[in-house]
Length: 169
Length: 405
Image (cartoon, rainbow over all chains, first blue to last red; front, side, top):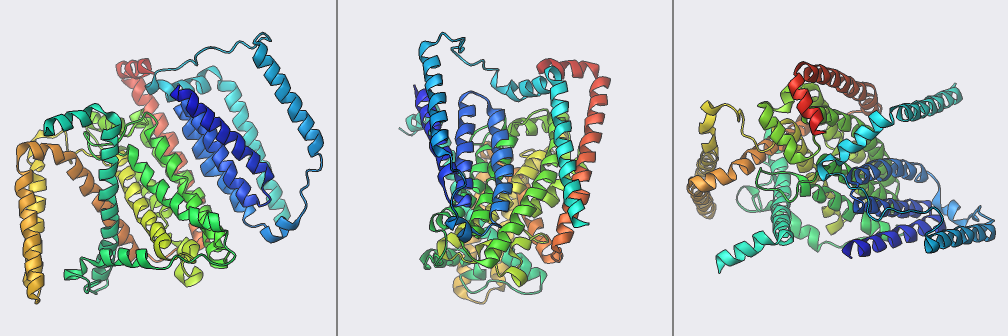
């Protein structure tokens, strides 16, 4: 019961703050709401006994990536930005699409029968072995995909450096 | 009655945790206040001055006076500031600094909680502290704070990488993220990890100084260039919050360094039983403090101050007698050694400030990215390879370790 209440609170927090992210005019405020969204999602991870994911979520997304967002956003002139019109002109279409997705999800969840077999309880590894389990999965079962993903990231990074350097010359 | 209450507390985990939190919060606030006093005194002595002398004997009441002054001052919000963020930012800093203590083991028998992602939790929460700085600087709507905040965030992000990677070296040896486990593994191995990971220790200490914005890396608040950096526009209690967060962070990084590299609550040479007499060190420390206070009192010319010093010395002797009881002596061993090691670190922080000139900004960045991060990576690879061969050599141990996973 307590778990359900916590989930509802965190879920609502995540949804509301996510809405705030895309509706704020001030980009810094958007970034702050994004932090709250990420935190709420991290809390849901914690609720699923995924402590490692929670920590990584906070360290990488909250402590790293959003800080870099803020870093860039702070250099933007907020006064000019506030007076600009939003570029999203297709909100009617977006609203219809969102409504369709929600209806579809609702239908599927309501009927239970569309190949949606949700396990009744999440698989919970012993608390002390949570991190080890993630490590084992990443570096033994999914070794190749992990390596390919890291090479992709490396290529992107090198590419960014090269493009920045070329501009300098 | 008293026993019933004791049993009730022990049987209610949440209440026990709450009491521990209150104790830690109260003691830490006091320590942080007197850390400022200690800094001013030590700096003064290193520069052949006396430091604060006016408020109370030897300026001992200076932190109280400072605190009162800051509480009573007007809380100014600059025109054009982003009010909500301006008010929120210092709170984030303090929150991030204090929450970390939830998982720091002050002794084998005294910590709020021990979670299996302890170190990751610390890294996660302390990485939030940067929001206090960056938002405070931005919300002030002023030039110096904004520049200070930008500098600070770049510096923190850079040195977090090197410091975090240095910690991974320790994790390879300990095989656990739990802070209590890490200390117990050091106890089991019979050696502090500083001797197995000297490079990582050095990198972590440098990164810790940079992450707390202390000299010689205090560019975010370089006063000759930026007035006061990100907190230029803050006054009164909110300024005090930033100040408190900075000094609490010094304690935090010292605690992490002590736990990971210096054996946490273990006494020096914990595995050598010939040095068991070291457990009487708390008594000696309190007696030494009493003698020092008497010596100070003898130099004082004011009669009232002499009385004060006599009372203080008597209190120290009383504490020495109290800890001489075997039960109490054993109970405080962990906390005593932990605090002693942390104190050495805090002293070193002040020492750096008195010794080193401030780095230039490009020097700071080039040390961080060109020296510290490659060095931390090299340390990580060498440690991993050595660890692998060590495990392969001790096949039985390896089976045990892998079997546990």
